Length: 162
Image 1: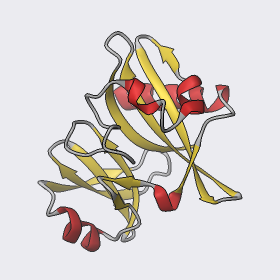
Image 2: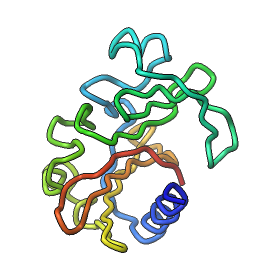
Image 3: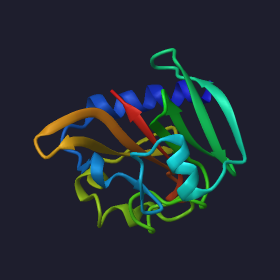
Image 4: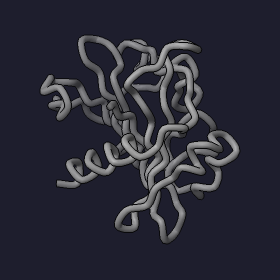
């Protein structure tokens, strides 16, 4: 139910905003590490996960591997990284200031257009950053930064697709 609500709200953001900031896939990183890794190279850099579980992707009905680190998830499919969901302060997205628990205002200096386009529904705030494959080539991927609208604290960060 929660994932379904999150997906519906995410799609609502996608359809409402057209001028969000974008980030090159080459600059997409967690704790300064590129996400263009295989499971083996990822664990060499970040360490072994607490647990690895099978995860069924809701968008394409494929089975992924969910590498879980203290509640945070990194998803791999066919030996390639395909997504992440950060749920606590152990990892940061893009810059050290953008992590769960920090004030959402930290995002403004890095992604001003996305910050300006932030949305709030039912007390949940969302900021979206588009992911580009190259300077001139868009992708269907984006990062969503969720936050509690009453505290302005980041509650999760995840990768989504249109």
